[in-house]
Image (tube, rainbow, N blue to C red; front, side, top):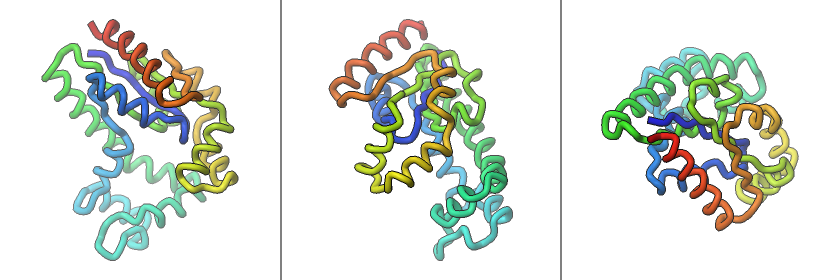
Length: 201
């Protein structure tokens, strides 16, 4: 088994890389998806969030109101740390269970953990390989404005809330430059996949 950490700044195209690795045969474990699952209605995680932040973070049907919670945690680093203390351990436990199942099915599996905040949460050491999807900040800003409807200031603020480009690159074993188009990315991911398969066997 090869344990791979995949990360990249917002707007870098990390999700495109994850999709392509999955198509090649990697088992992709998406930390964002798990983070939503561990605070779904009826979970212990959601109960903890409500206990910590109050009923105002719930929608009328009892689901987590992500926008309301984001307003609290993005404005206050201490609140963000409290939220992460609830969510991150649960995400890690779920990811470990999914990884164990993948390895039980195939001992030479390439298991890719897609983790937006891999560097910020100090997890690089947990992986055999860390792939960083990298683009210059101006490309990140342009993509966030074009694809997510953010203003340029909102985009820069979201980028600034994450690890710096330099911090991510320092953690990287493999860097995928995603400044080009999707056809260019296909070729790069194919070459990376060949390298991962070689390391896994």
